Image 1 (cartoon, one colour):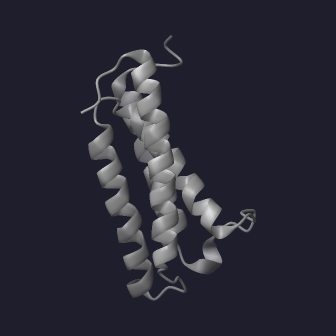
Image 2 (cartoon, one colour):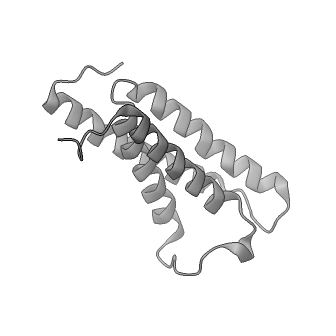
Image 3 (cartoon, rainbow, N blue to C red):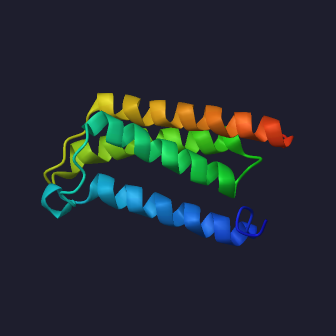
Length: 122
């Protein structure tokens, strides 16, 4: 069970690492991005935020609503920063929608898992 549910500090550290990775991928100058990411841009956004939501739900199992709100604000904030920072990135409202779709799907999966496990959601 330790591998599935390590201590909270370990889960929180992994969530912070995932957030830092997505923040870097979202805000790094365009020429610094890895070229291996080849599938459709909106699917990349949705997949990234789905992953963040699932890792966040694992780190904070009883704070799903707060997690979803924080990730939504981060997803919108990243697009605003891309629009104003001038490093070869462009903010796109459709990317913010794709981020939100990933969060919604991840939240649905996490809430279903919590219901199956009997964990209360706040």
